[in-house]
Image (tube, rainbow, N blue to C red; front, side, top):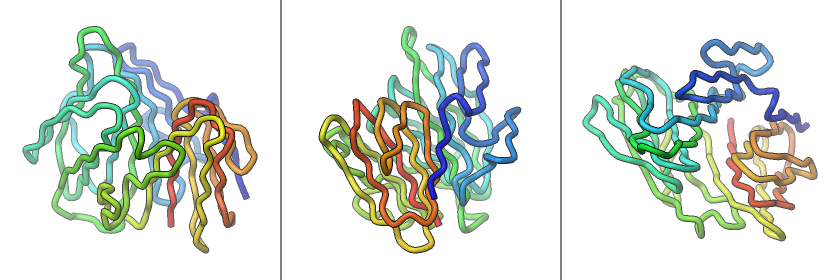
Length: 232
């Protein structure tokens, strides 16, 4: 079974410096039909104005993945990490028993566009940790490139959950299939462009939830960037 969620059905909050769309219930957006999907708890599509950002705040017991689409995002945390991530970078922070961090767009004249993803861990109270990896365009062109996994396979970042996150770029005749193991569920989010998933047309911001499907087929892309979540 496949359930389509259109972009305009998401929650929306515009704070002036931050324009954010919420795929799942978050902050003041509450939707009992879209609280989570398995351990996938948050996909926020955020646009941060120049010289603005999130001040220091705390998290615990959550796997937080940042995926930059445009611009750059500066990160600092209470466990000694500081870096700037850009398109192609994937940042993972395991909040564990508690971590403080900030995220800021230091560019004076350019907006930052990124996805913030939260995945609930399968173990609590671990030591907080941080990791980032770069996946270039060629890595993702016309294929599903693994970017996060429970064991860091294929150069992916490591998360505390039996979940696999893939990113892909598709245009024209490029296509990819994912064989789905029994009992797994799939969530596909279109970050930009347009594509079909099992014959269903999706545009930027759209998503599908898939359960009981044996294959997920991506085709007919038009400048598409896609994230696929293989979840328990």
